[in-house]
Image 1 (cartoon, rainbow, N blue to C red):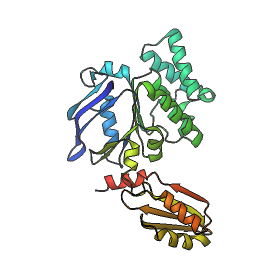
Image 2: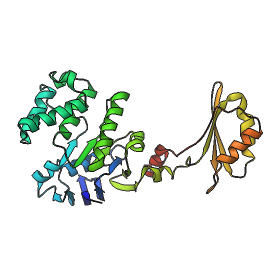
Image 3: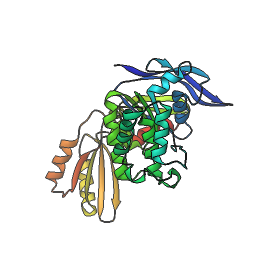
Image 4: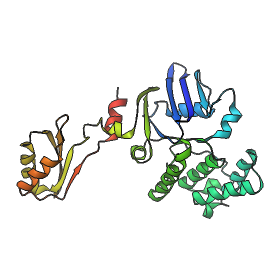
Length: 312
């Protein structure tokens, strides 16, 4: 795999506080990496150091083989960065700020028009192109920031909460765009939206107290959840007691969790280690004449794994 981002021993202190404590990882072309952690874990500090906005106390960051501290201009040609809050010049319009950034990056003529046009179309900025940025909604401000980060078609894209403030339709559009972009570059997404990592990312890193506590595919993290391969039943509350009694008789079931809401109920049967219980649950339900609205297998719950890894 073509490594586009390499981080070695990255550390940063703020007085007595270790914000980032010796982080090491690399990311290859085509990977979309979810960067997760609780508030204060060091996510934003790490990304600012990767982007060159903040010098590390120790360690090294390389983007496409160029050192962030020693070759900053080469890095900036290859890296796009959308910080949290997407700061821009509020009195400028989206059209003006894109033109300004294009000029700074020395794009001109047909190339400049092509790049701006592509961003306007991809991020649906047509209706606000000539409106002051300070008057835009949070979602539109986020899209303008994303357009500026993508304008130079970077090999490495660092995004801090890229869908913050977007409505469900806009989130879907941005996620679709990122999935398309990720085929030939590196994208790192720092987010607190765990479903975003499941939906988009090929890999996830979780940090806590400035250190990496997990580096795995989302499916591997889900497999660590106690809900992984549990079988759920959605049914009427009237049928819940009968269903629970039937499930309790199965050898492969370790325990049963029940949740009720007025006239409906959900039962979750947890398998014993190394046991598959879907077929036996279906058989028990059928033989017991129990009316069930839905039977499903739980893939696992990333929020549970996240809490377990970051609680200490």
